[in-house]
Length: 118
Image (cartoon, rainbow, N blue to C red; front, side, top):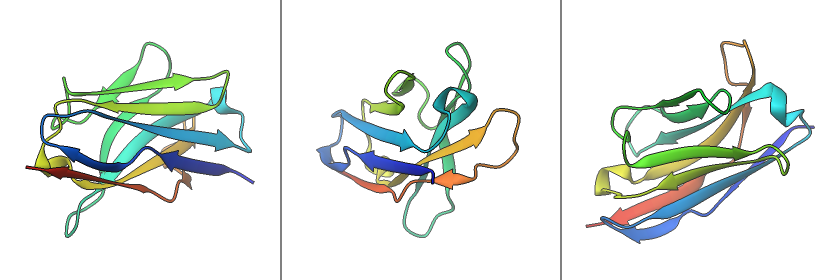
């Protein structure tokens, strides 16, 4: 059974930093694309960042230059380092996984709330 468990959310001041973690189990971690999505109240879920392999990453335009995704394949963890956060980064952040080559993300975490105060 695949499980993705996020941690690290909380309240942070505008301009501050926060690191989210997602520990995966029940899957062959190295064979999966790992990603972070977020959903703010009243808005659609959006892809924040994805790591396809050590050299290939994707960032949404709204977080480029501020957020960084990384993965620890030895410990099955994916991180999202958030810096220079803004109130508009307030959302529930979800970890997701899909097999390399797949179109859809088919495994999701329960989400962790990030609130940025102005």
